[in-house]
Length: 121
Ligand SMILES: C[S@@+](CC[C@H](N)C(=O)[O-])C[C@H]1O[C@@H](n2cnc3c(N)ncnc32)[C@H](O)[C@@H]1O
Image 1 (cartoon, rainbow, N blue to C red):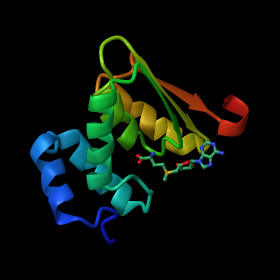
Image 2 (cartoon, helix red, strand yellow; image 1 turned 180 degrees about the vertical axis):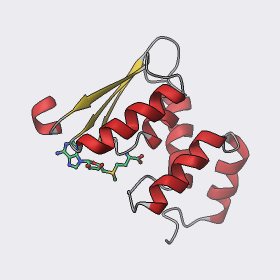
Image 3 (spheres, rainbow, N blue to C red; image 1 turned 90 degrees about the vertical axis):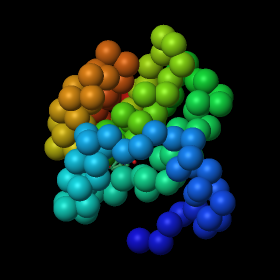
């Protein structure tokens, strides 16, 4: 898949200022790829990570959890006490997300809501 970020200097910057990949995220990328589950591109996740680090949100609302890949990355950069609400329609994906969020030890900071975001909101 073509990268969503086209400028090499921006990619270089993102790689320089964000953490190296951790094993859980790499496992999730592999899992999603193998099952054709759409998750955010690695570089785009890094861009969001930088934006969140700069803007220091206390709360994040995510619509479309899939397996929790972006939820985990965003929840890790929430500044101080805060939380991320994420909404997923598909029950199986929500179950998978729940497992990964627990493994990331972020279940205290991520509230996984099941159902149609239009209703949940
Ligand atoms: C592109 S994936 C999300 C990827 C995820 N944010 C990530 O990068 O790790 C979109 C997800 O939105 C879910 N979805 C679609 N329509 C929805 C709705 N109306 N309410 C909640 N979730 C929805 C799909 O089931 C799918 O898992």
